Image 1 (cartoon, rainbow over the protein chains, first blue to last red):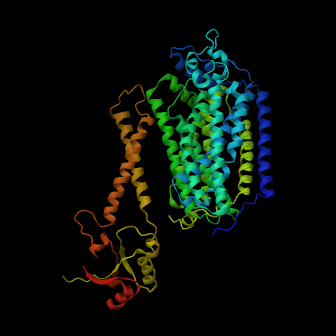
Image 2: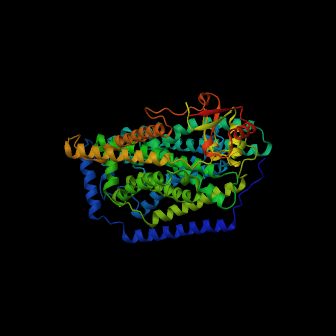
Image 3: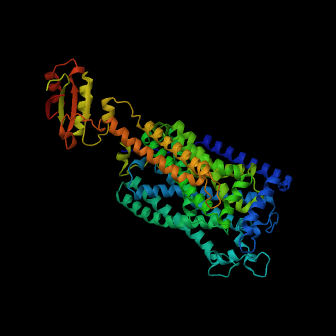
Length: 450
Length: 174
């Protein structure tokens, strides 16, 4: 039988995490200071040219030009530095919510597919799920704070035919946000969806976690069956809610634009990032002397997951890009034109493909690379950073237009989020058994051999 | 038919017996020519002391050949040899080439692997693989020991195989 094993969240580790967070705060303050002093009027020729291109593209559409594309027209309020802080907050929030919910999704997949190999590692994603309630509260609070700057559709003037901000296309989509209330009032439908998704995710997290921990105490197999039942139901809910969440929280930033691939796209990014985080924590625990039940065979499986889903993400990315590129409809193409023609989005656009496809594809291709922790320690951070950049390019261009930047504000904010996330996950991990004691498939996992 | 290729052939019913027999027989210094089984047996490669297969490298090479050919052919044909205006796109533009490149990579990798498999397992055209025992394609595991490569006599090897669980021991000449 599996012995008691608990992760000890050492003060030394805590100090390192605090230093990480402190560096983040320092960089953030420095970045804000620098951005305020420069005044945000750094429109160089390149950005002007890019603005012209996107203007000429949208000019052919038979609608009133959206204020979004009016260069320099600061129609909604905040200063550039504050908008950058808001954008960075929202981007990191979505990114880390994704990693947290993928923890629960991973556990649910393992139960629903009755997988045996993963019995020894399932406590790591379970601990990652502890971010769901925090991320949920954060998302809802941040939405109230930042909606004016991030979500163009939250302005009532957009729906007012008398206003010069009136936008026919967004008015046509208003029901998706405001139903059953009048367009331009409170987006009750949108808000209820947000609350409902986090509520459902949290409830299923609590239920599945309860069964998993109860199994440690009495060893009854019923807990496994209950966890499988909850997992199956959760997967159906998650399939719908993750797609709708992607439209709501990310795609609606570019309100005019739409892509039917987008739900999958955000999910694929979340999923491969979450897998990398799980693997990285497993490697970290093994190097600290924990998790004896996890050996090269289990790491091999996790590595295969990262390899395969990096390719899956690329497939979705390309599926979205190719159709828009080939159809060449201005209202769709402008999304990529904005990303490909102006800094910093253009170098991130291409870097994104290297970090998330070329590197994991080539580095994780051989069997040995997936079985050795030294290689996984290289690839997992690459994938995590790569998908952070992917989230940056999904969210920032739509909000900041040609004022966007990548600098101390973004790095600092990310370090703060990473520190808090690590603290929450590791302290949650230290409160539960690191390895399930009576998991019915533990024997299979111990003898797993590939 | 007289030939200098003589084999002692052990027939095994169970794969676990087979794997431990392989380990023990090799420990006694007997060189095993080859083992045939109707399905993949886990741990048999390690027991036989085989090196890791280099098939993945071959597969990668076939694949990268396909990638290069597909990219070259499309760029040359559509970009230079017979440029066509398709939706106002550049003649040689990368994105529309990617699906074809991907498919051709997979196609060449798959064909290459099938051909490699046929050659390696001696099933290429006009070649008749040695059949030590036809039942190795049904429900028996077959261990072939080459007498030319071993110092022990036929009878001694046969007895050792029997001792380690062979249900029958035959002789085979090619």
